Image 1 (cartoon, rainbow over the protein chains, first blue to last red):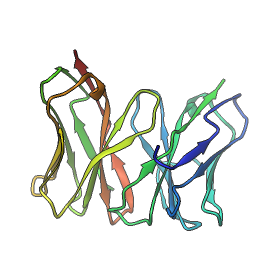
Image 2 (tube, rainbow over the protein chains, first blue to last red):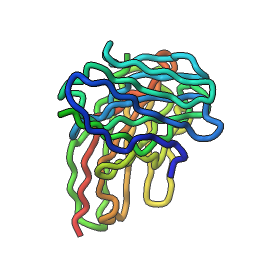
Image 3 (cartoon, one colour):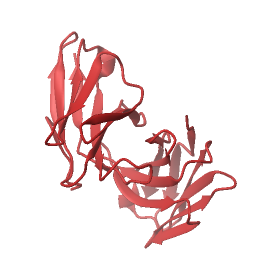
Image 4 (cartoon, chains in turn yellow, cyan):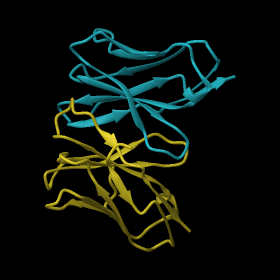
Length: 114
Length: 112
């Protein structure tokens, strides 16, 4: 157990809908990262937050947005869902935001769009 | 940005043999190289990492080597066991971009 928690574990929804995925970092970690992993694919970096502010952006679609709250938990909002958005979504956390900071992954949320 | 290439994409070894997975990166500024193991449907778990001021690091049956000049790093697993079967991802972290760049993964199958 890495100490990073994610809810829900599974999510099934329909095309066009909007969902929110939640992540709580390890105690003491200030940085949260979001990744998307499609079937048999690698990890695609979406976005990073540090202490409430956006730090880095990856291949995140405009239909997706995220935020980090004062208690440091983060939410990833996915809207106008398409079939291709079906994937495992992981968040990871690290103590700060430096490039040599180890990231610890949560258990993931499996999103299925029907 | 950074580009990380990982080889091979699949690797099958007999139990007890060694396995080697190689990654190359493009930006010499990258300075942190973790390796993650991911079992089917589960989260990536850090198994070993190396920073750019070190050439080799070992942890029991697992070792990682880094060649900064050639810009490549490798994961070595000795005396493989069936429970080593998983997908392994390398990553490179670049201070200029403040994010991890992951390789495409290697599916390791250890046959009993």
